[in-house]
Length: 477
Image (tube, rainbow, N blue to C red; front, side, top):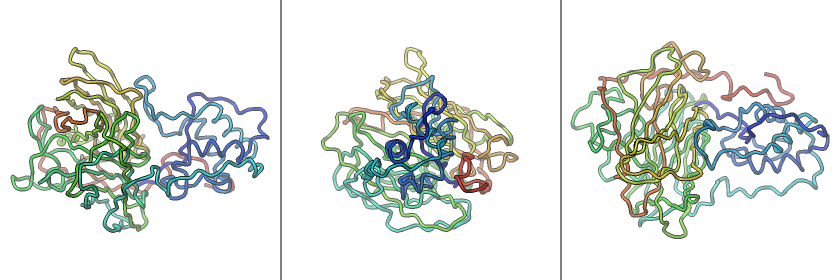
């Protein structure tokens, strides 16, 4: 897996010149407070970003890169089209903040007087939340330096003996450089151990019909009645970790997530070797809700809407996939999280209401290194029968700098070298509602092939970053 792009800095929506009085801008007085508020959540020791912005010594080499990132709008990682939707987690760095960062770089990036330095942020032991309960993989998993990647499933005892409401969940890989994603689920009795992201064995059935979860087809085996277990068109996820993601916080919508008590929890971890042999022992932190909420938060993960027999052609710069999800019960839509791989280009979510009205609620470009959730400022109420139309595009051309090999067609599957098209989204329902009744998935007109085929090897990228930042001061490319 490629390294996460650097400089998680929030930028404004306009470009401007630096102030004329640049010599008075210092790190301690002017820059550090901005970094503490907006950047250190990722740029601190032990976090996902590859360098810390906690001290002058660690930040100074990146002064010009910081300026370039904020002025050119390469950062922060935010890819939603501003014409659609209002999102509460959209970056909010002010024009003044950007001007200060640019002026600091232009004036020589001075440290300033130590007495102007603010107190350090009391980050909660590396966590972004202060967990009441911490769960860990039973032991570290060794990831080799090379290989096609693997998806491992770990079963761990449920720390909750009774049904428990939680207000936040944070998933923390100990070695994020090799972790493509982590999914947390409470498995149903008798549910097979499987990968949740690959395309289904056949077309997703019409609403209210059963379909298959992950199938032997997606793994290159022939299906039969003993190995392919019938499952729903979607799964319910308790929490997800992907590169660049934050923790799952349900408090904003006055909601919480209900974790069923007893049994086990299931962790699915997708590991991608990055050239260095390492080990990972992922942990999960839960923040308990102070009281039962009025609304239940549910993360719905529909199965891939892709037609598994239609591979992405070599060189195709705009391969389109469409799918329709239908609400089988009333709900409030609160968030979206597109998930694809290296050739992912964009995804659009459009609500079609029972009266025929259409509203595009998200149109976002996709960046494999920063797979963001888009959290609505105001929930959207949907009635039974409302449809969610999803349109996604993949870029398998040479113009896609993330593309491992534009000369080959691409299959659907779990490996990073293959592709996915997963329109995850979050909803609120009454605390007593049955989550299994929320969604039906519709797709027609396709049949499954006998095999998905071999994976395409992933090339090691030439740069450690997904965006070509200039070298820090004192270094050469």
